[in-house]
Amino acid sequence: MNRSSERILTTHTGSLPRPDALLAMLMDKEAGRARLPPQFDATASEAVRDVIDHQRACGVDVVNDGEMAKPDYSTYIKDRVTGFDGEMVDLPQSRDGRDFPEYFATQNSMGRVVSRPACTGPIAWKDPGAVDRDIGRFKAAIDAIKARGEAPSAGHFMTAVSPGQAARFLGNRYYPTHEAYLRALAAVLKDEYDAIARAGFILQVDCPDLASGWNNQFADLTLAQFADIVRLHLAVLDEATRDVPPEQLRLHLCWGNYSGPHNHDIALKEIIGQVLASRAMAVSFEGANPRHEHEWRVFTEVTLPPGKILIPGVLDSTSNFIEHPELIADRLCRYAEAVGRENVIAGTDCGFATFAGRLQVHPSIVWAKLEAMSAGAAIASRRLWGRKA
Image (tube, rainbow, N blue to C red):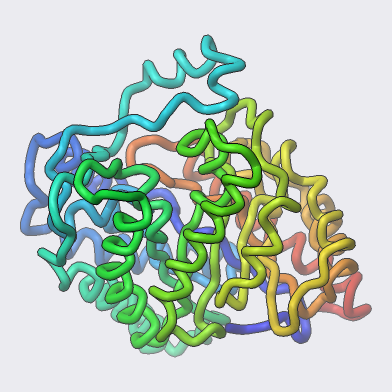
């Protein structure tokens, strides 16, 4: 994993806008209207090539495949493993949903975008080649860039869901306990984690369960009880990633990628200690939206363990405002002053296309926001290193 030794590097959380042709195929499959057509792989491969070019054009240093071939970042595994044939299960009413039911009623009326079937049988691989196809598309796109004689990116990453997040959206109706369900998920996901690492990519494990879970899935727990949940989820994740070198591992946590009240989001200080103690070298988290921007101060009180890297969000992934580069630089400098400039990489709060078919930020604005992030990182680099980035 590259470290900011001469300038602030840039990356993002994972999902990026999908082209219309690919999106239509994914949505037809999610709605049960059709299977993926024969041309899906070629369409997805072209989309991966294009999305890498877009990232590079925007000045993103550490790029990925944009999650082009996935309907979403977490429930995609329902199509890769057995056991998910049950009816869809909704999350319990969230803490902020109890306060603002009228608002959430308007959001729910938009309908479900991706299917979330419950687990009703034993989990095992039924399509173990799916991750290899993802890797193959990504590698082919990178090779095409090298064949053009262009300079390689500063790094490449791929995302995968954590056991805890998969359990959050795909309800358990089969395993006797929550822990048993987690470990069954981890047993298959480990193969996916290992494959991404073996391919030479940075593995980002998506873990909204560590923060957002407090607001909905575990909305009736106390802070002490939720701390035990976080401890369990991280222990299972550490075990599942035991063969992934820490320098190839980054963890993303968030409070839910939606434009809503968030007035019951758990404070970062309540969970960050456990998260920083995990095997992941880098931690990506929300740092730009109005509910969490102030939490940079946490890192003036918490000691960053040696070797760890922070990837704070400096772009709000739910707003069509394009952040000013000077604001982005301010945000980055605050973190750099708290933990050291070499320990900070610029990131985004969350993905910009978390669920296929539901965009909160217009695609053209997504690219403009990423360009602003690159410009802001350059300004921060000049401030922090005292020379041109």
